[in-house]
Length: 218
Image (cartoon, rainbow, N blue to C red):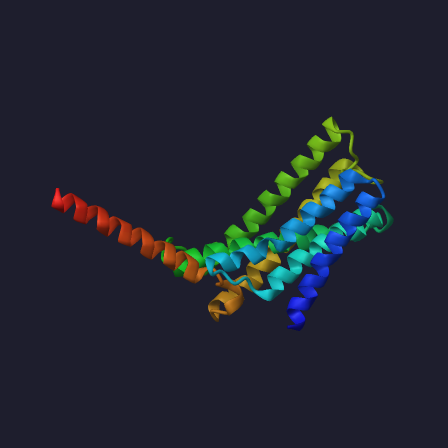
């Protein structure tokens, strides 16, 4: 019960922030806060498909969005504190990396793919760096064509990009190590999607059986 209250409290903060910003006539920022609130509620849709995400993952998603919108954007911590951006890069990438690890591990358990725990860890690290690189490209494009200043705020843009990628890589490495350790013990944190993929596999197998029966009848 307490865990659910914490999640709803964080989501309420995002919704309240979006309404407050509408009142302040800051519509662009209000829209970004509202979209963050919508994203934080996405895990609730998983119940429709009999998917139950670990509480820690739902908490991290909501918590990271609150930090970004309230702390980073509204209170401008990105410019006030030099450590805030690295923290957000690490946290955001770690969340995405954990989600990716869980998906690939579930595909392994449901025998959709054949891959070792080591290779899942390597994939997680590579995926984290790929996501980080894509984000840096988006920041570069926004600065170049939209006139933003997301790179090089008080620091050389190249240094800013490299530091961000280093934090992204560190987040991926940490998740890969922890995820692999948990996978060896078959910890519940890393396989919430197993039943979902098994159900898909059964449906696909039943569909193929029906097709074969139809061919035999013909």
